Length: 301
Image 1: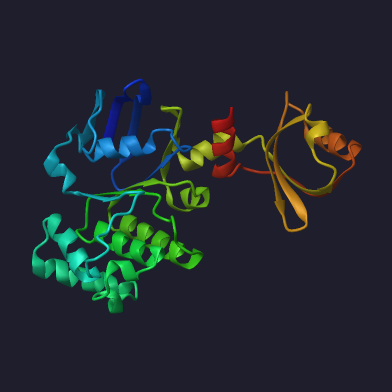
Image 2: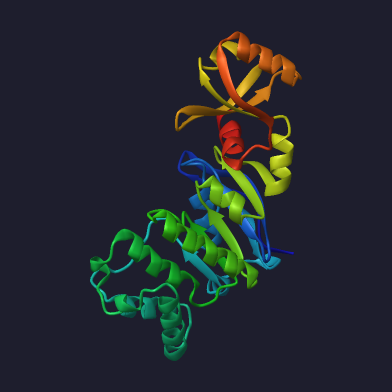
């Protein structure tokens, strides 16, 4: 069953088309990734689901029926633009936001203190928000997003501003919330997080859905013909008639490329083309594409 079903959503801002006949399905109890380059329409769709914006066309269903204002109370929303009151004490701010979600004072206090202890930030309770670093403030805002145990979590760029240790902490918590039955909608540019966390994804580009489905199936469908190459020496452009360069990145003292054979070229033809151009091959193998490579190839096509 789908917790959220967005059916033929269109949204215009004057002459600008933000969403054009977008349909996505978010299965209950799964972690769903909403992907796309900047300006694709992801945040607009998120705001429509949260009833912050109203679509021009289409319908959003929540548990199989049109979403209502009451349903929004069952959503935990972490926007990309963080917003805590800088002059308030952290504990007062967190209590205020928890109460807005319908929690009693006693329940809010108990749950918040449990989360603060879990994140090792109990000493921040009486600090003012303006005393916190960006990463510290985002820990607090993540807690206020999940404290009321929402049925649906919508997290817009939840890893922004975190160092690797705290980013992993948030990833672990998202996975744990998923194991506890929460449905999670995750918008991020971090493709490693998509592969680690998401069951299903939809990619929006130029206001339309380009691809949707399970992460595993998309990787199989789009990555089955790719070759992984580590090399030094001459660049690959001279042999471009034999293969398409999906990605080519520097890594330490070598380069790592992902290649797609052109017109059914086999491995021998690929290797002959590379060697004839003076490429020093360190390793060569067939591979399933990473989500980052698939993202780039679909957005640039």
